[in-house]
Image: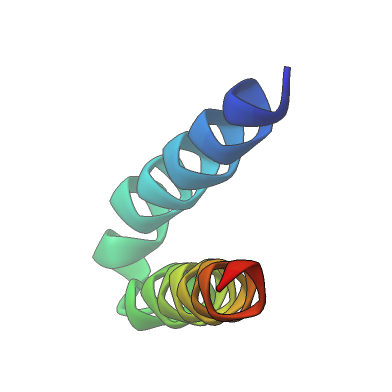
Length: 52
């Protein structure tokens, strides 16, 4: 179930980028997506680090 949330977040950002790109606002969803992916990477990094 958790993986579906990740897929939904990425898909919604891609759809928002598609629709906002014509209005020259396509960078906003990409910035949100990069922040989300950065958060996921940091969370996994600390999870792996604490398992040692």
